[in-house]
Length: 402
Ligand code: PMP
Ligand code: GLU
Image (cartoon, rainbow, N blue to C red; front, side, top):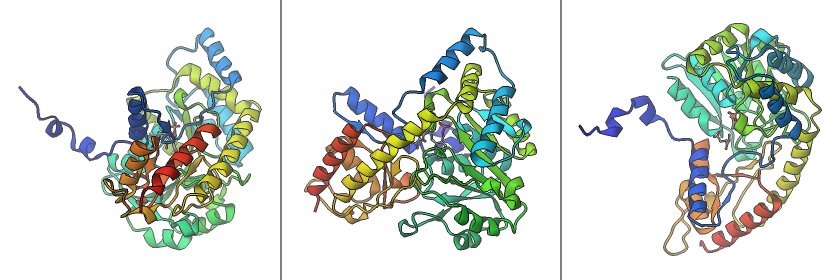
């Protein structure tokens, strides 16, 4: 019997978009495999190897027999190390029973949405947003409500905008700072302004994604959970992927009110169980070690940021903010909409990304997936040599469009 595959798949799945970052990275890999010289600036992944002492800790853990299931919320020693880290780096007070270690921050967010959301519950998502937020919220039955920060406001959402967006159905607010894709960083004062609004509602939760905390060029990372008014409403998300260049290890974590942590552990216990045992051992070592390798990576990102900023400024019609963290630029390229090189016309950010991929052989991601169809995202987690070549190609390609 032939099955109509599209009909057969669940509505939930067919309504879910494929991750645009992962899709573009895959497209770039396929083009490379076909022999094209593609520079991929699509995936947000540090290009550095995991620091040696962390790899050594994982090898040691394997030799020591850390090859079995762990408690679902994570090994106690890692949860203790996370509590120390939260206190040391963020001035956040959590106890081990408030920590859930997961298979990446992505899973932490999914656990939370599955644990908190009933059909129709609204989640205010600060826009531009990281691609997966919208689909995770929807998949969990919630309704993502984007609230947009304009490029003139450094892509940040104001307290007034937040106030206006809250309805009786709003259950949570979700944002990242430093932000993927804009690199914007909310200052302590900007968070304080948001807190004055959120404080009016006891049943509103803040999901604060701080996975880029270590890639913050302002040297002043602020955690919204430090505000006593909203501490019991805040879930702080973090992970090892970005600050420690451990994307493939799949270790993330959250700090949350205990009852929410328990709910998330319940979800995770049915889906995946605890994260890998030796990965957790290595993560504990990473969090407790000197952060020199992390600071060195940050210094390299800052240097590349300046480089890319200058190169972008040199391309007519490309408008950018000045990212203060993470490793992305999110330039507005709407001045190219309607421009053509003869056979091809750039109509929107999607066709812009297609042109850059097929003509410049540089993979970037359309801003549509991040909630801003005037922009594209470029990850500068790549070598200076690659970045210079990529931006030169982009400039050359765009010069043909008028
Ligand atoms: N949050 C943000 C803002 C991200 O950019 C990413 C992508 N790495 C994640 C969460 C998920 O990170 P991971 O699952 O690798 O810990
Ligand atoms: N978070 C990274 C990005 O935005 C990795 C890809 C993903 O997990 O979507 O590119």
